[in-house]
Image (cartoon, rainbow, N blue to C red; front, side, top):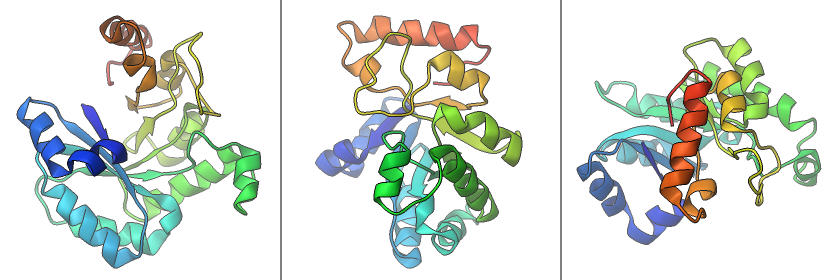
Length: 208
């Protein structure tokens, strides 16, 4: 799969998804919808019409009514993207959470939001590898966990606060890893991607 995020989608729109799907890629459409329930339901329904969208994100902080509306928007489709609730962004630490009025640690909040997402009908969550094990234990084996903020050993953390290596994320229960700048900023993106794939394989899974 390839990720189409807000930067690419803002620049190129649905055409980016259509072009990548035409090349044979599955699409992780990472637009992190967060609005009133009716608006998010409409956006999710429109996104589900795009070709080969396998994963689609929305913010869990939108609440159960918003997440429930998103679920209902695609519930009757034979083929639909898996809906993933973004828990706590990997760029945020406890101090950053406190700055926006959210109490507790990122781990506590991510776990609570994952449970809320599951109760609201979502298929999984996006969470840092540091919370993946607790979420897996709480939400069971069929609940999808997508881990961003993945950094190979020795790589720069950039603007991320809660990072894990590929092997750590996989061993903690991740189903998919999101890897961006460690590949796109590498002198040899191909070599960087292959090294990460080898690390994933050594951890016993192959999803990337």
